[in-house]
Length: 309
Image 1 (cartoon, helix red, strand yellow):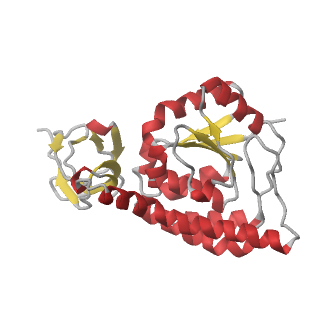
Image 2 (cartoon, one colour):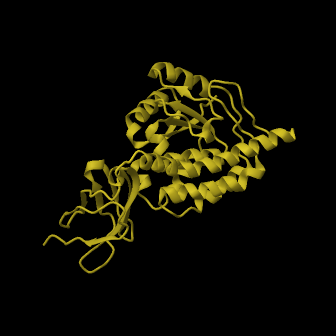
Image 3 (cartoon, one colour):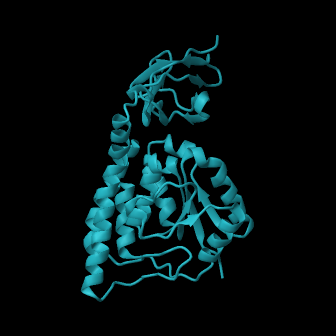
């Protein structure tokens, strides 16, 4: 029997742990999908992530303080809920699961080998993986998300979940347990219960960003020191004002890079203090490398590259 495919959801700060789980699962014959940073720098990342989650059976969620603050992680687990995927939360630290995720039993990361054994036990249980009409509809809606801003993409998923509340079919799973509802509950109370659970998910998703900001404000934190996800985007032209594709754009201090598309455009989402200045490098063969220090939050960073003569 073939082993289920796994999607790993994690915050960038937990990349080392994500890679460790990825290697361990691949060595044991599992198909694993882990996002690459370049995907989130592209224009169609919601579609790419939605399709990746839809084609996997499980979402291995590395839950930590950083994951709780990440709009990207929020988008991934919200999408998994919308697609009724089986979520396995791994509790990396003492951070409480978001209320929308408390239906799922988390596995504490006390030691790697012990946690891996529990994950394998959960993954190796035989589960029905029927594709539902509801899942197909959700995927079609995910493909229509055009924004590259993570907070806006999360709002789009909220709307999708809200539309699906009345079509609840269960599919509730607890890691390491035996709860697995894969059919529509005949009991009207159960239908109401799961509907309320999904509605709670919608309401609590909205609180992710506002609660954290309010906490910082109550503690008298300097707004310039509050770390948040910010966009840095722009367009690169040649000396004749033509869009310049395939330019490698880097943010060295964050170890991030992307390439401009056919319209010469690029975009990053960066976790850093509000409107912090960052080093940016743009280079393309045959052109003089450009170094800039823009402020995060800029979405119209347009500049030219000069040809080497």
